Amino acid sequence: MKAFSTLTKLGLVAALAFLLAACNVGPKYVRPNVTAPPAYRGADNAAVATDAKESLGDEQWAAVYREPELQELIRKALANNYDVRIAARRILEQEAQVRITRSQQFPTATVGGTAIGATLPSSLGTQIPSPLVNGSFNVSAAWTPDFWGLYRRQTEAARAQLLAQVWAKRAVQMTLVEQVATAYLQIRALDAQLEITKETIKVRQDSVALTKTLESGGSVPLSDVRQAEQLLYAATSEVPQLEEQIQQQENAIAFLLGENPGPIAHTDPNALAPPPQNLPAGLPSRLLERRPDIQQAEETLIAANAQIGVARAQFFPNLSISGSGGVGGDSLSSIFDPAGKTIYGIGTLTQPLFEGGKLRGQLQLSQQTKEEMVLNYEKTISGAFRDVSNALIALNKQRDYREQQEKLVEAAKDATRLARIRYQGGSTGYLEVLTTDSNLYAAQLNLVSAQQSEALALVQLYSALGGGWQS
Image 1 (cartoon, helix red, strand yellow):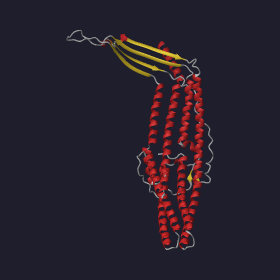
Image 2 (cartoon, helix red, strand yellow; image 1 turned 90 degrees about the vertical axis):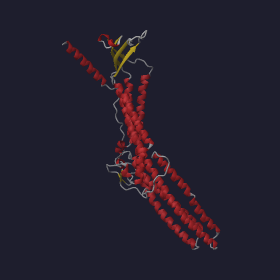
Image 3 (cartoon, helix red, strand yellow; image 1 turned 120 degrees about the vertical axis):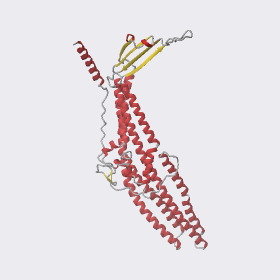
Image 4 (cartoon, rainbow, N blue to C red; image 1 turned 135 degrees about the horizontal axis):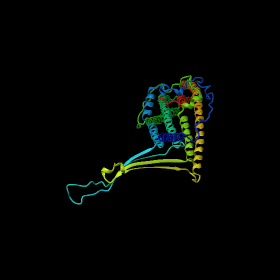
């Protein structure tokens, strides 16, 4: 009966310890209430489907960027880019930090032994005494019960930081896909402008030859030849500048791919094609779950909320329990003799009384940090809605701009054709040819820029909707 009573008391103590250990001080995390707009601004006028539950941001990047060259560049970048690899290492670092933090919740145990002193023979003989004079073997353990959830809150914060690093890596991947696609479209636009410039040079070389023929026959003055040469050299001077930008853009792409500077394949003729119609934008409320930067901001907020519990737990008593047991003796044969055993235990209970305002300062700091993270979370969401709206507006307006620019190019081509006919017939001076030719060249370059901007609008919309990190 006495043994049963003892077991009952031990059970009650264990149950009490368990209940105390299950206590977590500090606020429970509640996601801030952020009201999402019913629809994105600019979606009504853009070529998107706003009532679809699906979103372009849910698509994998290979389904959005269908150019084989661009797909290969993105694959290489995701595998070798330095920022992605650094982000992956940070995840592994934080995983180790979680294990370190969580280990505080468990008891620690150590085992050791000692050997002290030695005897040496006084003279040479056939037998040498045992060198061991005194030795011991002991096992010790220590535990600080987590009554108030101090260590559990620290672990919660560490795990939230781990998830924040995971989302940070996804944000890096999303940004990288956007950067590679943007750089590829930029280099294809430069290629198109270089091709237009070379074609313009051929036309202007013919114009120089014609004016020289007419000048030698006395039909036109020498000033017409000089004006024709002026047009030609204006075009030829653009070639080295465009080639410089192309090669530098190749180096920029190579860096994104984690490679040394070198040539990059960029020959796809459909890179600057207009984006497809009826792209699904999806519901704004789903953006909160898809955008990596929003998820990262929320995990950082969760970690800050857990730190309030850590600060509150510092106000409560702290119990530490340690114990040790071992055996020892003055010879090797007597070390493990039960008669030489030693067992002891220590329990300490500490309660902070006065620390000069440190504990309250820590609590206030953690609370203000959380409020800052709330604002950062709300700011990130607001910025995400802005990004999507801007991309939708750009998708609509750039399409209109490109269509008008195409009409301008056609008009400029006809004006240039008519001016050359009039000049060859002697009905007008070369100044009209110079003006119309310059306008045509500028309009053609602007059309390429318009095509590039429209293609980039799709890239920006896909990234703004949180697409690019899915695999």
